[in-house]
Amino acid sequence: MNTIPAYLVIGTPTSGRRGVIWDVITKTTADDEFCGVFISENEAPAASDKRIAAAQNAGIIRYKDADDAMEKIASLDSGKFTRIFFFADATRNLADCMEDFKRLVDAGHIRLARIWGVLDCELLCKLPDEVQPYADALAHYSDCLLLSRRENVSNKDVAEIKSRYEKQCLPLVFEYVDVNFHVAHPIELMIEEARRVSMLFEDFDPVDDLDIDEDNLPEEPFSLERKPDPYLEKLQNGLRKKPIPDLSKIAYAFRSVGGV
Image (cartoon, rainbow, N blue to C red; front, side, top):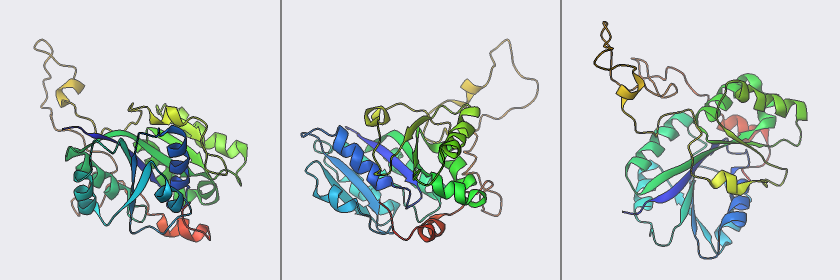
């Protein structure tokens, strides 16, 4: 079965995600290609929706929840759809969205090409206590971190945001988003190469992580269970051990307009 490459787009609802996707579709999609853009019904309409819907080589597909998205992805014609951009529901917790998308990939109709995190730099700089934990989670999952909403932020502050993750040696691809939500290197963003530190979507044998052989066996008992993703691990009471803050209400309140 042919799988359709899928780009997961994560970020707050007003970070400019849809504007970025419109720009990328315009710059990278040939006339004989077609992109499906999955957007949750829970999110407010955005200015770029009409442009995407009216495009000759792209179309919007609304989904209610993960099960609905699963059915709609399974029904796609892999001969027509050359790629999909899947917007995680920004009104829900990011950890829940990552678990849902893992189910969609495991179903076998799509393959994960890359995860793009679109970071609202102004929101982070104005509300660091609330937003920094979310930004760190975004960097944890993303192959590409797109620095958006920079018009009211100093170059020094933007440089510090980038430096935070460079000092952690995260293998991210960084991309600057301008005031019109254009990106300078769309082709680089489209490369199907994992640059994220999260191992959620990777298939690997836990034995490979152990430096053992028949001449080097550990004396103490050891576990071959795969370590859970730090943001998905739960306590006995069912709560996340390292919760990601919900920012949708804060993001909508921060701006008088919806997503773009």
